Image (cartoon, rainbow, N blue to C red; front, side, top):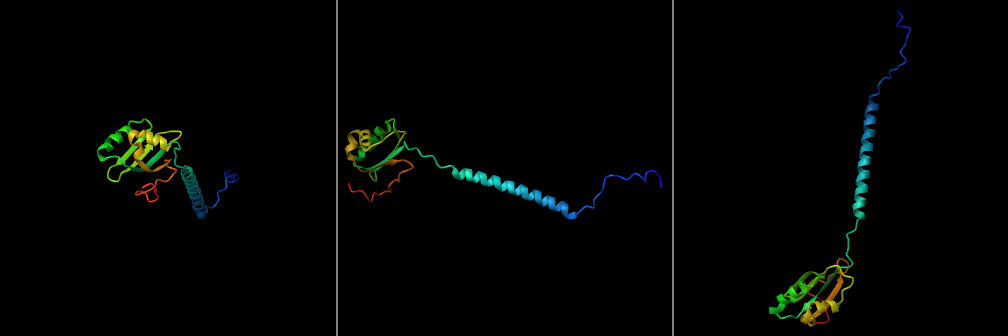
Length: 147
């Protein structure tokens, strides 16, 4: 035998295991899915941790008014002209009103009555609360003792 026979290669070739390749692929898939679900869990817990923002300085007022039908539009325009008012609804059919304020530090029944000017004395069953915190009573008002 020639001189090439006495030099053996130091590289050993292992017989390939057909299950080793499959096992490594399965391990990579497990890692991939684990990372995916971990990121999904983090994302969902972040979204669930966010609470809706409530403006404690935005108020609502609702109740019943006794304004003559031909003067309702004028009263509504008068309230809309107030810079602290965001939404005004005066319903001529049911004689109900709903007012939503802009950001204010406080809102009282006296404030509400002053906003309606001469019509302020025509309000009954008044409910005032913090928008998004206090429940708005459904119509018709069943617990109103002033009617």
